[in-house]
Length: 83
Image 1 (spheres, rainbow, N blue to C red):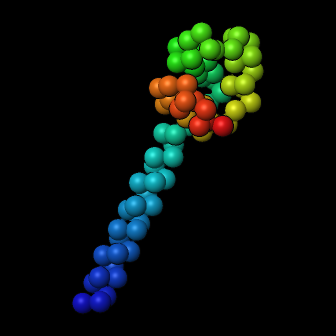
Image 2 (cartoon, one colour):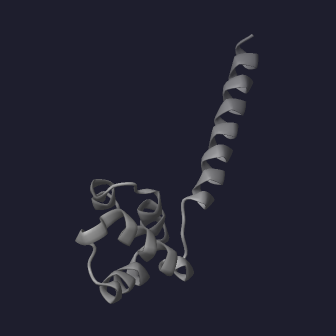
């Protein structure tokens, strides 16, 4: 009985690890999508948005996960959490 519980737990942990690994690929936005990231940020920030060249320069040096965070943000406060 203990062996069965051990294997059940091991299976759950393996499946959980696979799910986490699979979701990491969805949480990245490559530098090639900076135009979309900047456009989204301008829409979210409105009049508070910095000038386009500054935003594009920031996007190009940001990590894939930071760009993904920015694309998921729906408010200027959420954007502040992306650095």
